[in-house]
Length: 120
Image 1 (cartoon, rainbow, N blue to C red):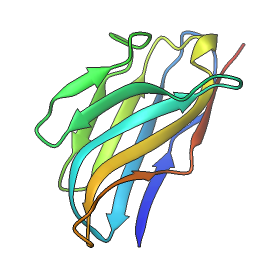
Image 2: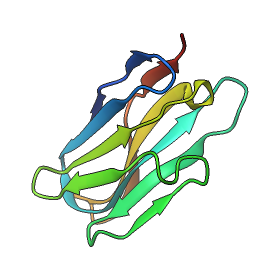
Image 3: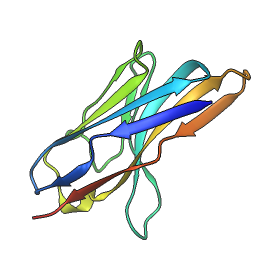
């Protein structure tokens, strides 16, 4: 069994900051990449940021320069620091772990989602 658990969402004023954390555990042999996606009401899920085990990073266009992503491979944990938050950043943020399972099959494991609301 695999668990992907997010924490750190909440309500913040425009211009403020939040940090999201996500830890993967369970029957995982290795993790290729971990990342964050978000989905706002009425919109498709979109990439926020993704980081491989080797440290390669990609960012969604709307968050470049504002949301640095980092990772602790030993802890199987990924972090997203969200700075200069805007109302349009309001969404449910999902963590993803692109992993090799104990069945030797590649899986995308998802967290349950964490609500981030940017509002005054």
